[in-house]
Length: 548
Image 1 (spheres, rainbow, N blue to C red):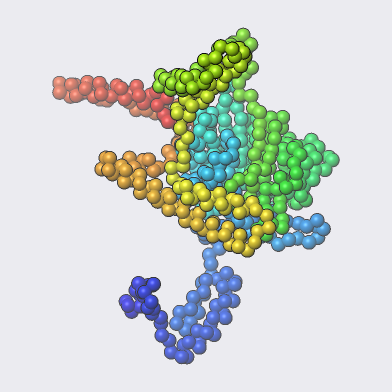
Image 2 (spheres, helix red, strand yellow):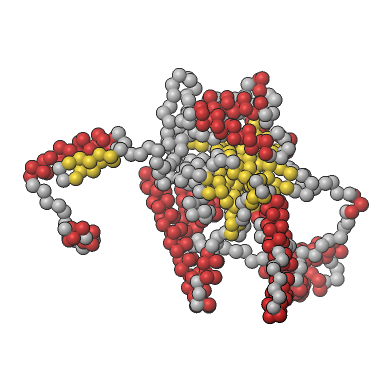
């Protein structure tokens, strides 16, 4: 029996071991194969043990930890009477986050070529309610169901100090509050239930959105995957929509329009004229159906200058949309404070020295400065050109371009090759096979690159310090913020309130008086303790030392 249990050890050796059944048992097992196939089609778990068929029904209430792909809104034909069967999606373009709470390296490469400040995420599939500070961005997310749903934001690092608070109301609705010098703005990211969801789920979703609007600032933006099709606007809807719709309206689209009208929200996708090929945000796997299901709504439509669909270098059947807004975060400056003084962009002595070296080198090589018959204007233009080149070279030396320290050049070349093949028209069978192979190869090489990076980092620190503590600190991609703190019975999510609560707590903790001792030795120890604790009190009670 032990020999049979260890039969996997014979793999790739040219030898194998199987069970040997009597003839009557073999015939019985063949008869059970057809019945097993029928039960599997019903969704049951089936296993043939010796001469018996063991059937166990799947637990439908249990949540599968594997990725459960959601579905797109129902697709209707122009005739209206015929409905196309619901098809399952591939991984969404907004399914951007791995379960390890680490942005995939492939996505990082795709986002490098996109200009954005705040990115709304739907169906993140990350568990918990967290705010993570990465090297170049802040990642906020909320999720409760393993492998499903989830909502969040990616905020560029330069807006870190403008984050007033993040609140995940559910795994389908989240709020990001931003505070600027004189103004405030709220962004509500949503992920609506799919077309297969019940009316109760839709009602619950819109009730959560209502609560989000109540908690938001006066100016707010509502955006995300609303899983609805609004189609071509009607004449009586001109207050919230313009003439540039797409597709055919469905029931969920009508519900969205009614909600926008009730809350005086403009559906801004219809405000900007685009070609039909630049309107859809989801397409079916066979490419036959294309729908617009991502929308941006706001009570301040005049802020928006453009809304466009992006084609990112990321394998997906979804396309994100980008809204460009002009939001004045400062008061108008007084004309009396304007000056023609040019600030020096070279901050250190080393940079200035490099600039002077480049400048002298260019002047010595240029023969124009040795001539005396050159017109003044030409002489001046040449001097400006040399100064500009010297500045550019000094800045390049100051800020060397950083490459990807994880992804190898080999993997990046495969990215470009796959993108080139995807954009080609009239794909042959050989081209499709190559694209399929590239998908597998890219995933394999990304994993291998990350393993190599991890191995080299640990090895480097082991050689330098003999410890792995700094290696694991370097490999950790983020540090976690405090999401909320309680003061009495109230829970505070605002960043200012959190810092205030933490500061008060540590001030009280380190200012707390200890019971007096009568002994001379205890008095000396107490005085020494106070001397040691004094700098700690000053350090802990200062709010600027709190990281978040």
